[in-house]
Amino acid sequence: MLLILLKASIAVLIFAIGMTATTEDIVYLWRRPAQLLKSIIAMYIVMPAVAVLMARTFDLPPRTELALVVLAICAGAPLLPKKLIKFGGDPSFVFSLIVTTSLLAIVTVPASLYLLAEVITFDTTAVTPLQVAGLIIKTFLVPLGVGMLFRLAAPALSERVGDPLLKIASAVMALCALAALAIGFHLVFEVGLPSLIAFAVFTLSAIVIGHLLGGPNPSDRISLAIACASRHIGLALLIAANARGQHALALVVAYLLASAVVSIPYVRWITKHRPPA
Image (tube, rainbow, N blue to C red; front, side, top):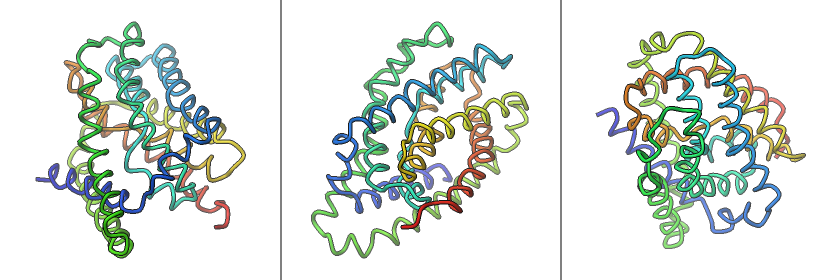
């Protein structure tokens, strides 16, 4: 029941985001190739390199090494736009980045698994572009597209309903996530302290890299920093489900906890120092 409610709230949330988005938002980064290139380098080249370096350098359990690499290649989180805008991110930059990374994931996730086959023990044929595309289409592109079509058909109603719907869906999703975290909290102890520290270091590295590569514009730095530190958990779980012997839920709970511990101070700092609107 909890999982069904969580999935439904995510779909409604993305639908509501679509109600506030325009075609101009989607193509924002496509018209700014320098910004797009820096974002892709940060999310798809630098972060996987950091994960591989950590896996090779630190004495971590094999399952944690696999989790780091998998999380690194699952860049982009479709629930980011509202959060980033609230913290001072550029709405168009944020939305264009999320749409672009979600589309790129159809190719980059299977390709990255193939290229990193020597680093991680994984059957590279277990996750296909078709599976990744199906997940992204079902969980992100369809509710987003329906929301955008609804905006075109009823712009006045979208303006009136969009924000309250977004708030309700966000609140329900947050409650479900907290309940899931509470239920699975005991799994954190199963993962162990070294793995928790590794996840925290990975998240901190992502924030620093995104902040540095975001460019001179403060809102772009905020957007890319939080985007780099956020992973597409749905894609990570798809890969984990095909990796035999991996304690996927325990690793995900541990990652979410460690990531929150590192991200919260950064979020508070940028909220305090964010540029005036």
